[in-house]
Image (tube, rainbow over all chains, first blue to last red; front, side):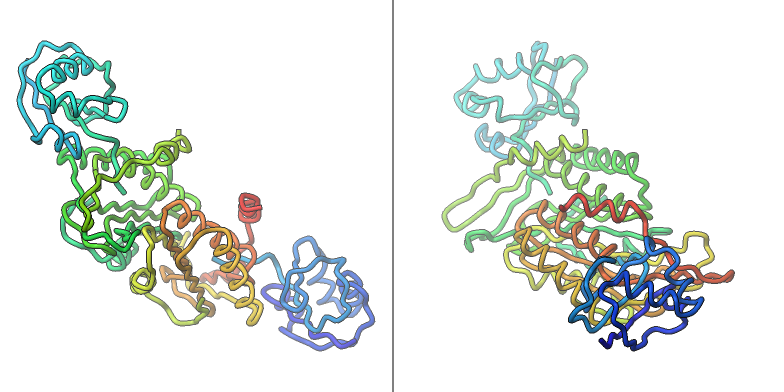
Length: 83
Length: 83
Length: 145
Length: 145
């Protein structure tokens, strides 16, 4: 499956890019994160503490256990600080 | 003792004047109201239901049992509707 | 604190108030408007108790400043004759943080409603009626005691 | 709902919003301002997630309109680079009665804080830092559940 990954705020800064396209067979968000962590140290740095991170699937907030089936866009970011 | 009495909103309308000066020996607000009630029907009409009224002594909200000693100005009015 | 017969522009007042704040991250405003409920309001008359009104508002504002860390608070209230859809009054509060600004504005409104000596009369084609105080407005004060 | 880089004037927005309401007796506004806490803020940068931001704000506004009888609701949020003491965002709500207008404005703010995809970075002479989300902001949502 092809996924667009988006990174925001310090996740984007640690990984060093705002967006990338990946091929993956990961079933859940957690599986995808494990896969990314194994890639390079900058991913390991970004995903070291997932309790400090949030994830959105196709622009809706989701959970680490959420399935990726049918999803096109996955975004990782720290807790929002709007307002 | 000389008191300035002030009336507002429908209390003023029922009594038919905004302000008057009275001589009284009433010890409390309740005594004063009893005295006024005995005067004329328009006072009886204004003070018929004192639970619907508020009183201020020298521009501070007070109670029906509050003493009048040292007071100069007594105001009667319905519950406020500011804001 | 201002007590006036003339109409005021809430936006201008908000901008002037905001510009005067130092270190405020949050500004809350409330504007009360003469509402033409039945489509029949000719005008509204607001009576007040000169002297006590100023004293009561000052007391309420001082109490708010004691309870919340405000950089400033504004109260404008009109009296006299108001047309439908005109601003009756406004409050504005400013603080470093939003919760203080919101709570202080609500506190000011709750107390101005029930403890500042204003009385509203609605005049329609059919006659006029004093606006009755609502039990819920008196009950709203319990939140702050 | 507006998402923009340009500065806006809260007073003008408030007046335009108020003028567009029918039957509103109460208008509440909140303005968030870039606060220069230590006297050292050079500027603030606000990043957002285009697409999701609009969707999230629309969802929050719709939820507010479902919960309270509002005659209208406004959200303006900026992104990009902001100087100190500039307006970051504002919300305005209008209703027949004050409690609905206040609660809806607080609801909008609580959700915009923690559920709209914005991230603030403070840039000072010493470097830059992402603003950390506060536990109390997340806890504030409990009030509405």
